[in-house]
Image (cartoon, rainbow, N blue to C red; front, side, top):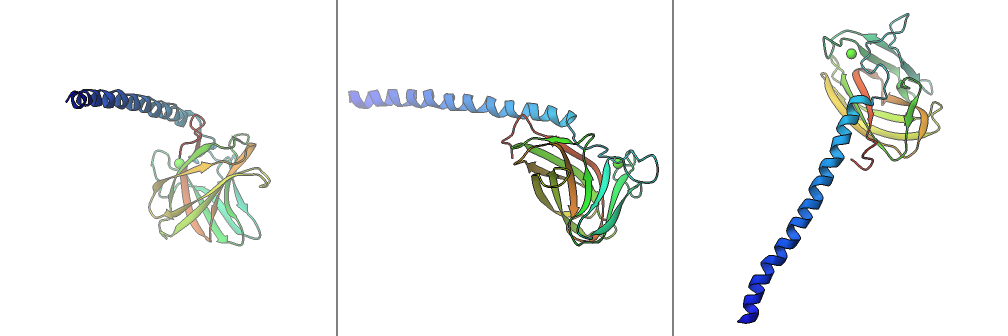
Length: 209
Ligand SMILES: [Ca+2]
């Protein structure tokens, strides 16, 4: 009888002493990791002229963006204001690929090259549309050196197209480069419009998905 009574008294005490310890240690860590990330989103966009509101002094090309065509691919880019995603931010980039024989797309190097660090997460966000064709494309995004020999990160975002929508692609880097560029490439011939492109490093939280 005495042993049974002792167990009834001791068991609840043991459970209570373990339970609160686990809960207290988990909660503050999770909350603390998210707060610095939210601050970084506001100030760290590596893309220059990601909303395409700045034009070159002459012509209709957007500042900071270049057309890239490898292995005999062909097409062009234009800064346009037709069918905007946002009337208050009316210009977008029209990427038109007429011949796809190799990698073809657009490149942005930030203001003086993007300082990309290895083993970090970078969040690419952008708006895109393909109206009136409504075709969808799997866009291939790379962070790489100007000569393309150092590929810091590469990932594909599938099924981009239709009416204006926002997209997000997390990129994880395996190499660093101090003056990298970002390339958004089309998988085949076609036309797509892009706007509000941003690339934000998550330097406070490298292991985040
Ligand atoms: Ca715009």
